[in-house]
Amino acid sequence: MPFLDLPQHRLHYRIDGDGKRPWLLLCNSIGTDLHMWDEQIEAFSRDFRVLRYDRRGHARSSAPPPPWTVSDLGRDVLALLDALDAERVHFCGLSLGGLIGQWLALHAPRRIGRLVVCSTAAKIGSAEAWRSRIALVRERGMDAVAEATPSRWFTDAFAQAHPERVRSILATMRSLSPEVYAAYCGILIDADFRAELADIAAPLLAVAGRDDATTTPADLKCIAHGVADGRYLELPGRHLTNVESAAAFTPAVLDFLHS
Image (cartoon, rainbow, N blue to C red; front, top):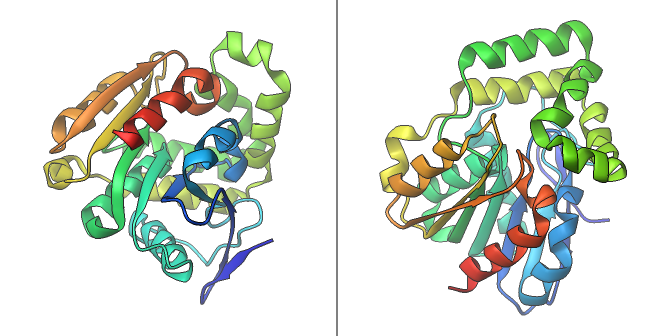
């Protein structure tokens, strides 16, 4: 079980695929672990050396004392790439993972090949909404957050058809400490790349869930139209597009990475 030990915390990671192939890094949403990408691994690992990891405070990764910033999360990625001698990677991130991808494309552009940002935004939500979420989790714990999550992340039809998959994803959410979750909400209060999108030079694919009310199709169109070389893709489903629309998501991302 591979770990990277950093000065104040450790990151759990996993690599799938042939070591001679190009790197592809997958970056999760808040409240999920590296298994969020299970639907993609078989196909992605045929063509790439796939690196995925548990973000600080999730699953097998520990966390330094908060508060943190999106820059801290980006530097976690760079430390992991340095430790693995991964000079340049393609990057696919969902939700907060998409924000981290934007930070990397802006602050470490030579490390990023092609960039896929899914169910994200240049600025996710409002400060008021995230402060309300912080108050909720501190008052009522992670169960209160997890109870509202299925309807944000999945359509009712998907949740009813795949209850075990939904339960397994929510188990990671429930396992987070309230303070870790609150720290991530704090990151989202401040993270804002709207004024910097034009500086992103990496070829970019923005993937939206058609019924996602958290990061809407308009948010992803804004990214695709705001960067130097952007494309837009809309798929059925809500927030976890890679899970709900895996049959369309996986080949579309591969097509973009190979284009």
